[in-house]
Length: 470
Ligand SMILES: Nc1ncnc2c1ncn2[C@@H]1O[C@H](COP(=O)(O)OP(=O)(O)OP(=O)(O)O)[C@@H](O)[C@H]1O
Ligand SMILES: [Mg+2]
Image (cartoon, rainbow, N blue to C red; front, side, top):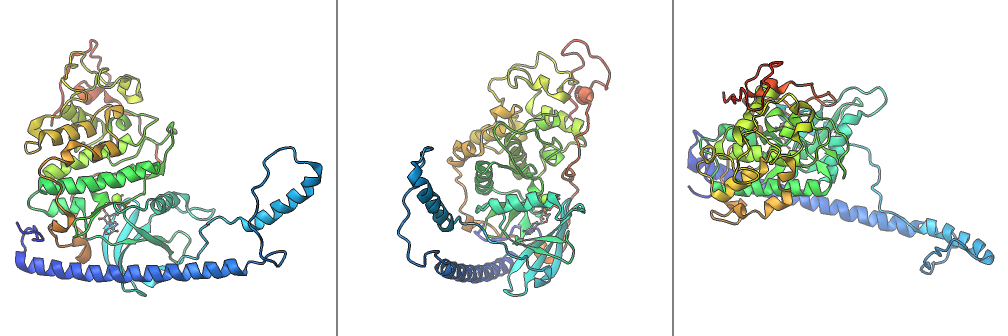
């Protein structure tokens, strides 16, 4: 298959390649223009700032010599007190921190809406044109609960984390624009032709192993950056990964993202869309960390390999059942302490299911027949039941899987795909929605996860152990 050939189901490959080439050239031009404008704007701001500094009045009217370091002693000599106070005064006029200035948001009328892309749980997304520059962007209107006392706080996290998350594998938030009402808030982002979910649904063949590596490596790079900034995404899934026709993939949708600390604070448990939710969250862990994102990446890796979501539970109990059917049930060797998780109390797990040659155990090879041993090792690590056994994003990046053949495919050699987002409302196969913000996690009874009806006492560990594999 040639480098930029379309793998779209019913297209004429040659026409497609020409269209794609033209699109790429157009896109390049647009980018160059935008970059030039940005640079112009920056130098204009720098000049204005320099002028402002020059114009700042100096109390004495003279040029000041460089200030001496301030005395730090707690016991200044009496005679010096007056002088010191004077110095401090002067210093306060000289010390300036690089603070971002306040600017008014532009109005959304500066954009012409071209077509609707998707409605998600937290926003409506459309493709739009910046009327001033002609650039194509994505506009996401935030769904905000109305707030009687000013700007709705829930939207602030998405904006704040996105603004901090400047990385080549995180979607670029250009600006925030407002409509007429206080809660008409729109995020203006770079536009992407695809999200990974829609693309996987539409592709006839799965990505090649070398392509999967390039994509996974980029997502890991973005995630490593987020975690280094103490940001947990908390809703990683294929529909929240955006792709363009230049082989680039970016993490998007920061609607559930938040900062975390060490030790982790008490956080809401109802996060991450069900199919990508980690076992510790499902079992009701009150404290959790960035490992929940690593689990989601494991699910995404599996989905890239098979084109199908890996663990499609119908509800929380079914999700746990499906997880354990894939990984094997937990035990206190591979996951010490899982028993103390709130929802684990109702789990009936046989004590005999302890034998595993590695920790975490390898996932069944039959599930991923075309994956190399290194690849199987990586996905097994990502989907380790015990969060402490999952590798960090940084560790994943140096995994042998990325260094063995076939090597990650260069981005410029990536195939192109016609963009649903660019033309029409997307057809989306049903997937569970992201959890609603601020809701409590329901209390769950996992007694039926291994074939025991709720309330039924299996008594001895190991009794009634039948995994529901349906
Ligand atoms: N910058 C963009 N360029 C192109 N399409 C985008 C962009 N941002 C979002 N989309 C599309 O819109 C969809 C919904 O966007 P997003 O995930 O940000 O909203 P959401 O309401 O939080 O979604 P959900 O709750 O369904 O996860 C994405 O899955 C993607 O298809
Ligand atoms: Mg989303």
